[in-house]
Length: 246
Image (cartoon, rainbow, N blue to C red; front, side):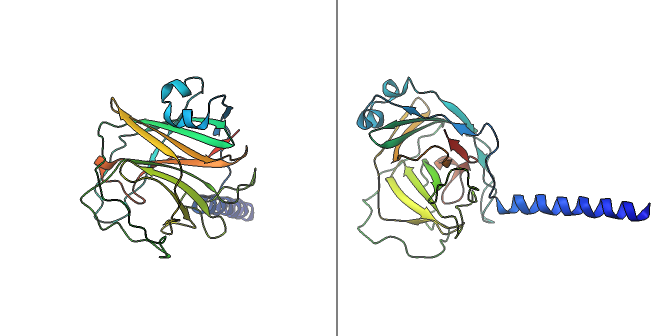
């Protein structure tokens, strides 16, 4: 009897270790239901980028829950879950994937800054915390794997890893759009490229439209939102789990 109990305990311990390891890798297949419908729009790319609600009213919306990152630095102030949901609409047009993100935000955090100097992309392997801690902007982003094989294990939500790099289409209310890439936490870097995007703030709500490549069905995508009034920047943000394009 004692031997049988030891065997059962050993198996249970092994299963627990496997479960904890899987959580630690953060590289798992999205759960059922985490899928996003994409329509083939009859509108042009320009009208989807600039047409506002009139160009998007025929596109179904999905309400995607957002999570709050834990404190990254000892100096981080506590942050409540002020933005629990982002509304996502997707449409294919002109060989592109248009993504519209909308979310409620009580504050409009954007300032006018000088233009970004014409400097080469960042070359640091790992980033440090932003030194400018007196200004913070509202922002949004879409992340997807560089290697987007359908049905493959998704990369870590912590900006991928060396074997599973990610592209990040990032927009903020002050600088506009910029393409970024990453191979793990702390490795996010600017590529020096930008892409078409628009953002409007009205009646306490942001609506941001990003023009992405025409990603094929089965591609996992994740979303992020930064709230300037909560001093969000870098990895301090709201984020979704992976969703899969239909």
